[in-house]
Image 1 (cartoon, rainbow, N blue to C red):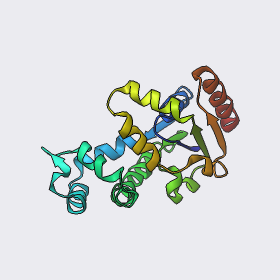
Image 2: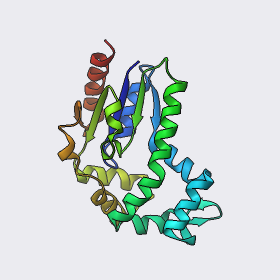
Image 3: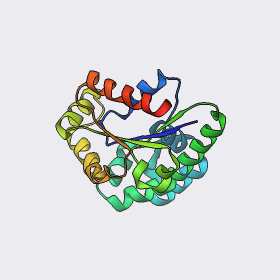
Image 4: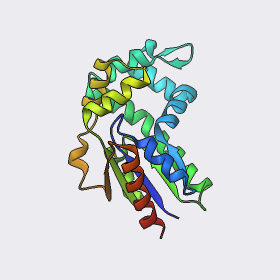
Amino acid sequence: MKRIGITGGIGSGKSFVSSIFLKYNFKSFNSDFEAKNIINNNNEIKNQIIEKFGVFSYNNDTLNSEYISNIIFKDNKKLGQINKIVHPKVYDSYREFIIKNKNFNTVFESALLFDYENFKNNDYNILITCPENLRIERIMARGNLSYDDIKRIINSQIDYDKKKHVADFCIENIESQTTRKHVTEIIEKIIM
């Protein structure tokens, strides 16, 4: 069974690319969704976040996203600290997902794929890129972040252009039909 990693910055189109794999009977693991689940439901992780970032980290047992974002996206050291708390648990969940879906090809969608060595466990890694102005436009359309917040997040992420040499495939996701065609070609190479 094939294990595929999909990565890229916020607004690049990772979820769109992952959705194409689903049509080919791949099982998909979204690390962002799992991280939110862990952050809000794992008491051990909650306690570590509160210890590191303070009592205002949670409101009514739910992560205070605005408070945490104002800390971590202004300070890469703080961003690294929260990633070191949460990411190992996310990867533990991914390993369980792999075991549960051992008879299926799988996709691991993660903005942090190349931040850790885990990408080496995949058969193939796909990097999704997109011009920054288009990424900002896409994120603004979701309506939950300001322009300044988006810029802070983008600036806090790794420079994906410097990671192209690590990826097995790179896709520039500007227009959906062209991206769909490239992804389909990659899938056909992978599963043939």
